[in-house]
Amino acid sequence: MGFRVSMIFAYLDEFGHNGPYVSRNDKRYNTSPVFGLAGFLMPEARVRSFGTCFLQLKQNYLAQDPTRQEKPFHEWEKKGTNFFTAKSITKYPAIRECMFRLIKEINARDGKIIYQGREKIRGDGSGLNPNGLYTTIFSDMIRAIDEYCETIGENFVIVLDQNSVRNELLVTASKTMYGARPTRRMICPPFEVESHLNQQVQAADWIATIKGRIWNSRLDQTAFNDMALYDTYFSERIAQISTNSEVKKRRPPKPKRALKETALGSALTTAGYQFGHK
Image 1: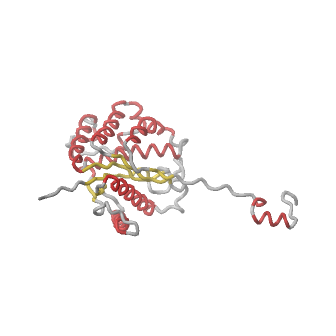
Image 2: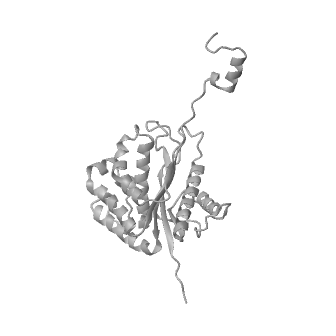
Image 3: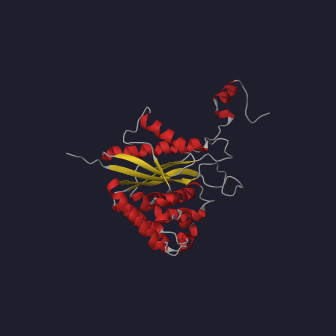
């Protein structure tokens, strides 16, 4: 007698940027105050129909897009950064509706949106290790998916777009799977695919775009005030079907204590030194 094993597929893409960030007006380091991974989880029995649905979304909402240049829709990708611009989501209700539909279709197939990210150290990069940040967040994401899958009693695999730090991610996945706190629900290291040929990874890219711009606005409101409407339009809908997700903010630096408030200051006072007098 045969048996059938169910599984969760996790499709992920990047949001923000893992390099240094000073400010949006900086000549060099001006990309994003956050970096993370976002996408969705879906039972394998629903993955095929979701791919068809996403393809139909592109056909319905992007039929007149000139950048397609007559390519078949199943061989063409519209990047979320180019589709869901601050101008387009404000000016064209149909573009907002397209994302609403995507969220609805994920939910209808027992899917969940998931994301993990971190606010970056601001500066010229002296305190930032971009690859280290990437692998840390990837490990956080693996553990978040593993926790979710443990609660529902399913195993999972991860599918990613092709990546320049592929080897580092594979090493990170192996360490997380088999290390001191093994993620036992992950059955193998991640798969990489060509995103323009994979509808599910393209959907993850759209989700990651929205989450990245929401968090740009939240973490640097003045500089990214043009992105505030991403939060208004999409945050609540995304939150309704999200699981095991967070963006970790940096703690504000502790204010420096005046010398007279420290132990050294107290000792000097006891010895007869008066602060504020020469």
